[in-house]
Image (cartoon, rainbow, N blue to C red; front, side, top):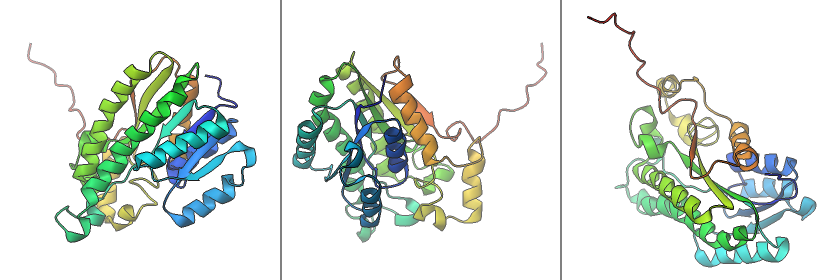
Length: 275
């Protein structure tokens, strides 16, 4: 896909991964729509970098869990941009066991629902209401950002970082990706980018990472074949590949986890055999 001048809706651009994606796509000459809602200090940084209408970007305060606000966002995109080619569906909320503990605590009374509404339902609301705009384009792409929590759940070293509701919500994203790929074909490609331990998301730069002991951090890295966490800029490059270079890829999951999912126990030395 030729992407210069294309219009992209980038969720979560206020922080970390979303900001790296926004910068990468803007550097490629794309016009961005970046909804924001919380994290006031990060919003101020986003406004300073992309606000003021320069380069044709649009920042809009939107609670993406509310159908009426998502509809207003799409109307604003239609009015100002006249259409949409790209959606980077990067919205989530996950409770970390190392931070929040279990769901039976009073402080976590609404946590399960928040994880489901933000990580799963908000993605559906965005795609559902962006679909008419995407269908106007000859070629469009949707990238669902998910987590390996949908595979490993609350098990192994990462069980300190992935809570049950967050893991269940991420497993549901796979179903949405495949269904939306069928709905969007042949002009709208829909793929999923499944992330492992990334700096600012389940890695350094998060409160949960700072609460882990040295041994717990080492266990996480030993379970990751590449022995390190990923960087937001690496996620942004993977998003760029899926948008620009993967014209024959749809309904697929690309796992960017440094080998965490296949880490752990190493294969034994091949025996001599008995024949």
